[in-house]
Length: 284
Image (cartoon, rainbow, N blue to C red; front, side, top):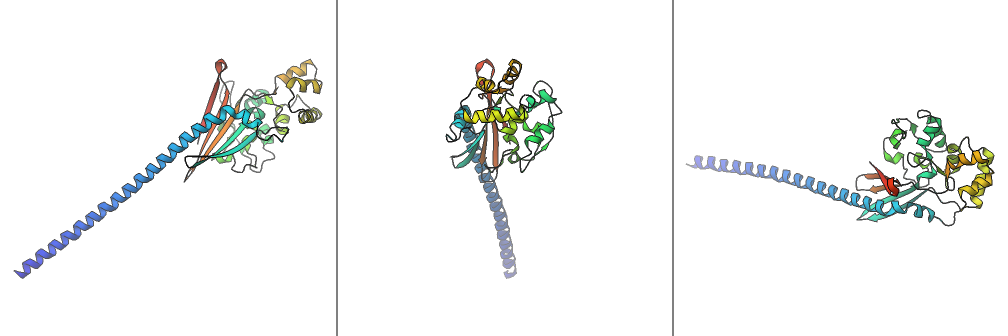
């Protein structure tokens, strides 16, 4: 009888240990599941904050891009091509980079001038002063606008190679664009861009004369610049077909810094059909 009781007690103890082991396994699995769901919920919340914060930045900043650039630094005679600002929305930091795309060399205009597959040397010259230039790999489309994104011009692995984190360091896209009419805003563009975009129209002496004129007369018009350069009718017509004194194409990079990664969005605003405006977007 005592032996039977001992066997039953041992069996009960074994079953209790088995139940505890199963319960512990289930509790651990439940904890892992809960943790995974919490992480997923946190990531979803962050992505939602990034999404709506990015949409808000685009809606507010892109339509006001020209005003933001013009008001960037009233102490400077020539307004900058690019400005940076940082805002915080919903606990997420957003870096905003606003640029005048018509103050950059247009890849499609270069393609019309030199040939679709022959613009690589010109893009390389525009990167000659950069500390971290990108390899040129041309992937044109067919049609009148062969280049519609930076992936068709440069080889890069991450968007941070296009828009560098250091605001004082120029990036490959500081002087090159795929958007806009191709007319260069001579009042704002940097000398290398004007030299490259207006090659064959202006010699070095005329370039120097133009830069001195716009420094002395920052509010000058294109017609006043043409008159100052003393162009004849043929060259004046060519200048009007290559230059402008205003910009209607701007870009906005929105870089949202999340807990584990950065989210990159690029918006480009340009005139649409029927007198309205259109916006192109790229996401990484």
